[in-house]
Amino acid sequence: MTVLAVRAGLLLVVLGLWETVGRASNPLLAVPPSAVLPALRDLLLLRSYPDLPANVLLTLREIAAAYALAVVAGLACGFALGFHWLIGRAWGPMLAALYAVPAVVWYPSLMLFFGLDAASKIAFGFLLGFFPVTLAVLAGIRQVNPHLVTVARAYGAGSLTVFVRVMVPAMLFTLVGGLRTALALAVVGVIVGEVLGSKRGMGALINHAYGLLRTADYVALVLVTLALVVGSDVVASLVERRARRWNE
Amino acid sequence: MTAPARLIAVESVSKRYVTSSGPVEALHDVSLTVSEGEFCTLIGPSGCGKSTLLGMLGGLVYPESGRILVDARPVTGPDPGRAATVFQDPGLFPWRTVLENVEFGLELAGSAAARRRSIATALLGPLGLKGFAEKYPRELSGGMKQRVAIGRALAIDAKILLMDEPFGALDEQTRVLMGEWLLDIWRRTRKTVIFVTHSLHEALFLSTRIAVMTARPGRIKSVLELPMDYPRSMESPELVALRAKLWGEIREESLRAMQ
Ligand SMILES: Nc1ncnc2c1ncn2[C@@H]1O[C@H](COP(=O)(O)OP(=O)(O)O)[C@@H](O)[C@H]1O
Ligand SMILES: [Mg+2]
Image 1 (cartoon, each protein chain N blue to C red):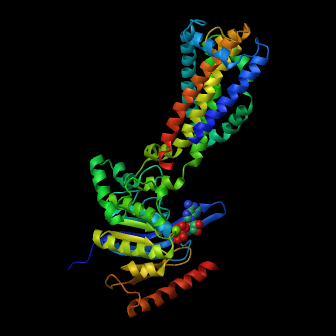
Image 2: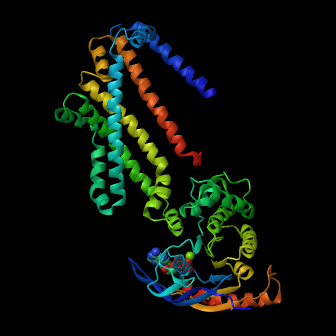
Image 3: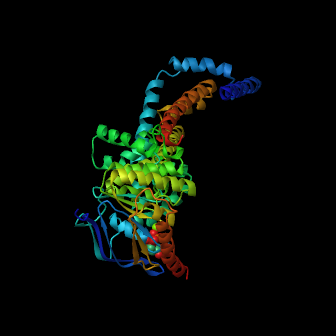
């Protein structure tokens, strides 16, 4: 309750500051909330950008594709590195080194490779989402208490049963944490990809409004994007909490 | 009256572990037989191979030579149908409730959900865990956790219960109470128990037989029979005498183990 009140207070302060500063500055560059609201209304009523739904849909589809690929490849890679001693030793350090490179440096080559359309955005979202999944699998495997594996074996569990009944539940929280981070990063990857070079999608609309100095529309578009991101993260955090029911 | 059937036969078993600092001979030519319904305790200095022997009986460790028969069949791997193990670390699954932990073995054995639930629920009373069915392990005390682990072993209803210092991590008072509780459970279920402990009190209070092991490499040094009735008074002249004898044997081996 008090947390909500404090949060609302902070929001009001930020909006107040924004309004004052916005009114005092160059209207081409800074827009106060009072100017964003009408722009947001026009946007949502499809007056300023009638093709908003198609673009939102495209962005969501790109995110879904990037995320699905990142999860599948990340899980496969993580388990291969974690379970196979030789693969882990040979490739683990290389993976860590790759992860340390700011991913955005790969984007130009992704565009050359995959073109300016959806594929390069999906590839970039994938690239950002892949590492957190892989690393979460590796961290999760290290977290499994070997004694619990012994206990399960004493009760007759074979490798598959040990994996399903012991490894997966023991790793679940870490894994879901990684999946959540991956989702957030896949979203970032796709949208940044669109902003950096695309004709369609939310990022492209943002770029368009920004390029034409339609600042109020630009802010309204950013707010819609933000809602997308926050919405997906709320869902992910609910899943995460469920995965840790036993350790509330 | 016919003699109780031999349920477990350990026949000249030896075991060496290969470690980075060379081979360690854990057990050397160990033989032991245990009859149905016995409470047989293994006692001996740390590192003398008690856990190794228990692991072999449970099929988790393989003998290097010799063989182990349980129910007249050689042990080739874990077989929860024959023996259930309780470890010093209860090893409860933290993501499972008390009831779900007790059900674990039944679940692996493929028993139906309703049947599992009723078996596990019926055990909660004797385990002293009524009202804790839906709790998670981290909400339990050490003694309760170990009772859940024992419940998990009892649930699959194997003839043999292998217990490796099950109360070793508990404080002295809890430990004594858990011993009394286990005695009661054992007398009601008539399981055959192989029990590892460091506590003379526990050994004398519970066992029908105590096998004293030598310092590493472990061998059976001597076997004491305890024909007294339960519950036992530790002040009875017989037990006082036995205690002195047992301590003499263990002391010698512990001194050797310290050198
Ligand atoms: N997995 C293993 N690898 C190497 N050495 C082991 C292993 N398990 C036990 N040992 C060694 O074998 C000896 C007997 O161990 P253990 O059976 O655990 O004894 P106890 O339970 O009587 O303390 C010890 O010296 C121990 O260090
Ligand atoms: Mg031990």
